[in-house]
Image (cartoon, rainbow, N blue to C red; front, side, top):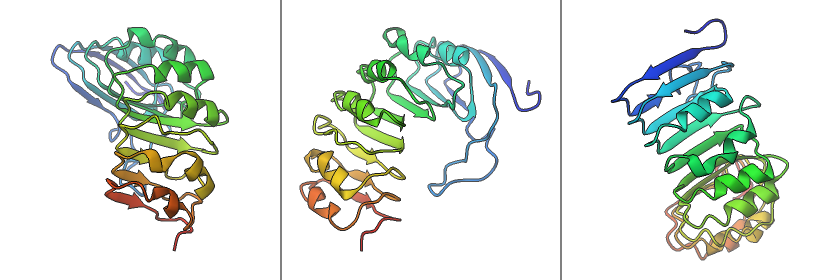
Length: 232
């Protein structure tokens, strides 16, 4: 049911494992990475009773808080990708103790309070985290930097922080594309201490040739994206 620019979906299934609305509600365009550009559909409501549900991608639509709570009641859920832009209450992140064992969490456009960030960072099953950083970027990274089990981290939007990421020693993939990162910030983030890093995306940031000095210790690095930077 999709009246106007909203939709409502009710799911009851004992066998459904994947719910992917990323293409269904896409406007047909893709970004520079080949991913669908999110639609601007608002007011999405999803009621789910799916005990075998593993992966949910609603990153191209804006679901409400009740829908997120409902999805997080699925006991086997491992991957949740969503966008907020004001439609999701931070209170949903106060209930992480009751969450299923999430391995992957993408929070596109969900700007969290310090308390909510701290709660999310305590989900020790998380291995992949994509987080929106706004005005409280220092607090956000400070909390995330204590989750030593993370293997993949993506920072969306702003970044003007001096918090060290050195504790993330298991990190193998770091994506900082499009943030305000400078070479000076890269040094302060201690990127060179991430000895297991294999993938690093610094594209469309403000780094220049001086960033290479901080990356020299990364002996396992296989992929470095510097497209759209001031590097030569």
